[in-house]
Image 1 (tube, rainbow, N blue to C red):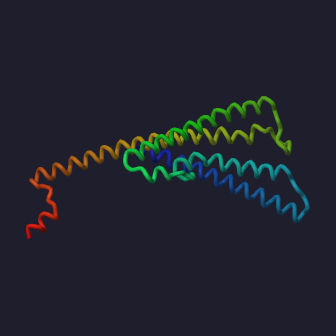
Image 2 (tube, helix red, strand yellow):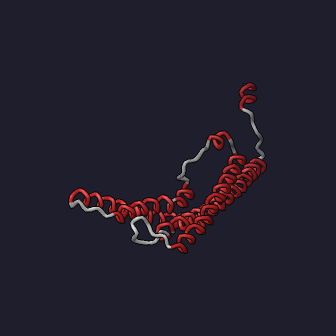
Image 3 (cartoon, one colour):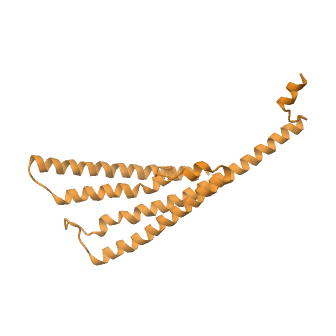
Length: 194
């Protein structure tokens, strides 16, 4: 379990680092575009377009790590009302539904990018083909699918560990009580005797 968690925490940190680099590059392109436009009265459409694609790439690439870290917005009104095993089961069901959504998007994004590749459509600035920046969608949703599967596995393993921990704790308490010949003492009864 520790190696499993360490691997996905490392992968998450790696993708977060790539996202930070892409975000810095996006900010650099935007600042360069603004500087060139207001100082030299020169505008490059491709720089503005690249910064837009970089920004979109950051959002899509970090979908998976945010799933892993629980960073997405949750509707947890129902979960707050539930307790114990029921709450855990509902969480796992929600994660399975999320897996269905991200894997569906991953599959369809591959079809979309391959159709763009075959048609050779150029971007708005006509500097490169449209499939190149669009490739971030299947890449991002591939990682989202992998992280979602890992999240479900983590939840199930934690669910089993908590159950076995609860059972072992109960058994341990019973062993201690039996070995010391202790009984449950009600405080109210002992005070009445005084």
